[in-house]
Amino acid sequence: MNPKKRTYELIVEQINMLCLEQNLQPGDRLPSERDLASLFGVSRTSVREALKRLESKNILEIRQGGGSFLAVSKRDTLGNELRTHIDETHAQLIDEMLELRRAFEVEAASLAAQRATAENLEAIKYVLTQMAEAIDDPELGVQADLDFHLQVAYATKNQLLIDLMETLANRMEENIRATRRQRFTDSSRHLDTLKEHEEIYLAIAGGNSDLARQLMDKHISRIRLELYRAT
Image (cartoon, rainbow, N blue to C red; front, top):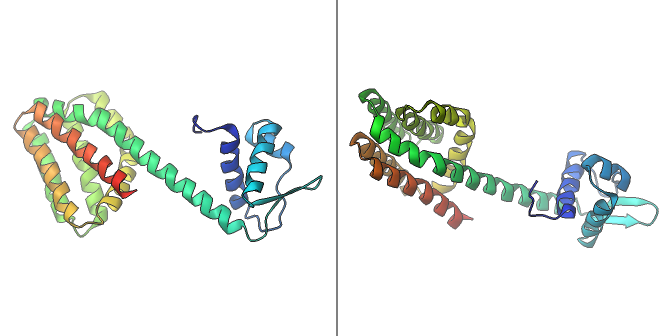
């Protein structure tokens, strides 16, 4: 739940979701105010305010003493509003994950430059060859991208950081898949991204911790900037 939103705004979203989940059709009746309040764990006053807001948008019809009904021909409007909300929420989660990644991957790159063994460097270099071969294979590109960042983490020799990366691996994979899908509408970005990763590798291989930190920060910050421009 977004704390910046008022209670009735959150209830509006929950009612929208409820209508779609229950496949309510135009003319169908919603649960009573009391039932909705119990279902969402809020006051009837907040539910009433949310219902009035939906009525003002002509999504619901409130009949005095008869309850609330999905307005005729308005189900598509409700669906569109919910899809917009889901898209906005998804974009926010992508950005928050990038924000989190920036917080610990920048330091990971710096530590990797100080502690990477020859074996670590060989593993990172191998992933780069996979990334180069994946230009025409989006899913292989996602896996290679994820593996690159995991291998950098392994090179830090910090077990807590490694555990964190492995715990977040599934979410990172989805984050990388989502960002690559949006960024690579321009095919030239494949080569640019490969170059960014190669530069990080070279800084780590050269033991330049400050440069590795700067390049990783620049890499993730650039992704966020490109996503902002795309929305």
